[in-house]
Image (cartoon, rainbow, N blue to C red; front, side):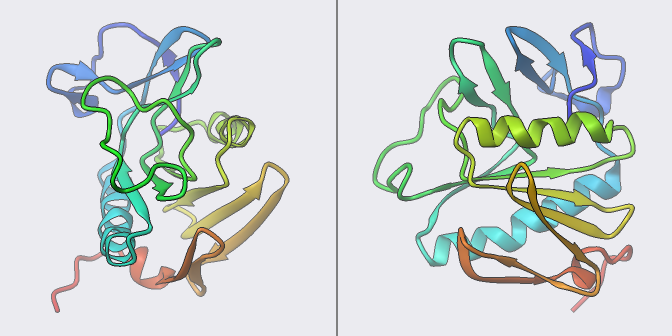
Length: 190
């Protein structure tokens, strides 16, 4: 999800959790996140559900959904990727997670699923911000285009379509996801 409007009482209950709207903080200003479409939310859930067992089985690190990361304490920048991966090298698995507040670090991988309510250039702007603060890779998932943009830096991007298999290199070696399966519009029973 990306930033859109400055904080005011949320009009859309879809973007609320426990009575509070989802938000990020940009230069000390609380910014509401737009409501995610059900299809984009379903795609984000599928990605999390597919990554979770891979990360757990390999003891690769920690995977979270919609967690708020403090990227810059001085400028008070807090971002909430739809899915984030923090490697065991950055945060060892035997180190307890913060029980309260936000996580003061940049995730190794930030995944942003683009919804019709998002403004693309604002989401792309977050890519550079993630890299400025130590993120190694950013995935922008465009369900409407059936594409995933994998950024290895703010200027290096690989574009995967629904004809491709998304790989997790270099962060998640061996991970593979056929995008045709991810972007299906119908729920399949096995």
